[in-house]
Structures are given as structure tokens and as C-alpha cells.
Image (cartoon, rainbow, N blue to C red; front, side, top):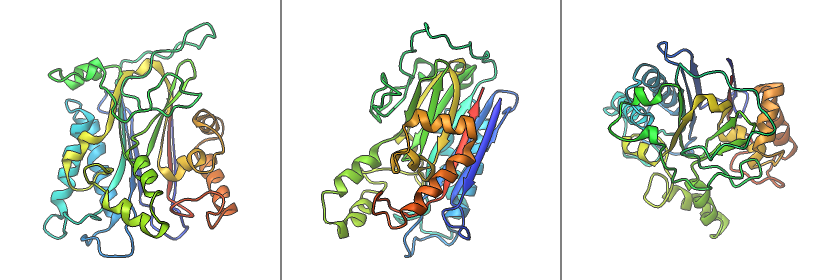
Length: 320
């Protein structure tokens, strides 16, 4: 199994607010992946004395432990428990009700241990049915996927069944907010799993004067009708896109923070399939290098408008 990780802060001497970790095998039962993108607060009080890097380190560490050691828990349960555990650590010193309390986007992946190696792809093999729970972009590389964030769980996620039993030989995933998970089937079809509520908030913000857009987006952070990130409320886990599929249907996967996914989403260097192909052939560091080149070529965001000229960027790649 090939596992690669690349991460880089947006600016050379700034703290990297992303978090990424992989475990394989996880207690002898497959493996797990955790990716967080810490939300950079404005230059104003946020109610916390610790800061975003501290928060993502604690939340990420709790998530890795839970996804590895508690296979009886679903991924939403792992996320809820990790949020609660992290909140308890600084509840006495910090105002966790503050809208800008440290928070992060989340990608979780966990896979079982008994999956068979993927069969060699054949041109005559029909494309598989849409992956359960997938909220994929309506792109040519994912023609059958539904562009919805309200992903339905697969039969293996049915309540009342032991999660460890149902996850045996399966790949489970969870995505919260604007990080991206790319899944490549054994036939080579690439689907993007995305939670799209922030896309809609940004679209609505563009209808108001530019000077008011940031405040409009902030007013909808972790609010009903807005978008949600992992902060101090464990109930946010229910807002995530989740799903599962047989692990032997997956050739590779790639988890991206938005600083890395801007290769496609902002700079339009290629679609999701082309992005994954770049990482497969040249590695995740090559993706980050191309993003930095594109950022330097448009430092003021005149051609490619974006919230930050340079952003923390992380890519985590797994191939079988």
C-alpha cells in the first residue's frame, strides 16, 4: 500500500494550521486517515488563549486515536467524541461559545482489513454504481454522482448494526465543510466527495456589496441555514457528508485541504481526475509546488479571486 503526505504553510515563517495523520494497520484492522484544516481567525479576539494550531493538534490527535482504537464507533460518533474531548480540555480557560472559537474542516477515512487487491481494470467492465454517500461535483469525471450534500448512508451504515462488523472490508468516509476527498474506482472513475454548504453561502455573499461579504459569511458560521465546522459543539458531526463502500472497489484516494484543492477549484489547472493523476505520477509535493507557482503568478488575486493569496496546503494520498 502506497501512503504519501505533503503539507506546507501558506507563508514560510507562519504556523501551519492544517493537521494530517495516517495509521496502518489500525489495531490490525485496516487503517485510518485524518485531515483537518484549521480556520484562521481575523485579527480580533476569538475567546481562546490557545490558538488554532493547538486546537487542530488536540482534535486531530483525538480523532486518530478514536478512529483507530474504537472501531465500534461510526465516524460521526468519533468526530462528536473528539470534539467533546477537546472542548473539555480548554472549557475552563476559554469562551467556547465565541463564534470564532478555534475550529476546523474535517476529512476522516477508515478502511477494513480483509479487502482483496483490486482486479486489473478492463475496458469492457461497466462503470460501478454511484458510491454510497458521495456528494460529487457534476463533472465529466464523475458523471453518475449526485451533486448534493445530503448524502444517504449505505446499507452498511444502518443503525442498530455493530459498526465494526459492517466496516469489515469496507471504506468509510466523512467530510465536513470545504475540504475535499477524491475517490478513484478500480475502473479509474474519480468522484469528489464534498460538503457544499459553504459554496452556497459564498454564492449568496456575492449578491451583497464587497465590503459586506466577509461579515455576511461570518454571520452564517455554525448557524442554521449557514455552514458548519468542527468547533466545540459535538452535534455538528451530524452535518457531515458520510458514506461507505467496499474497499476493493477503491484503487486510490486523495484528501485535500482547500489550500491544495484550489489547483482545481480556483486556478482551474485541471479537473479532479487530472489532479489525482498528477499526484499519482509525481506525488503530493508536486501538487503543492504547482499551487504555489499559481499563487505567485497572481499575488493580488486579480485573475483568480480568493480569500487568501497563499494558504496552508495539505494533500494525503493512499493507493492500493
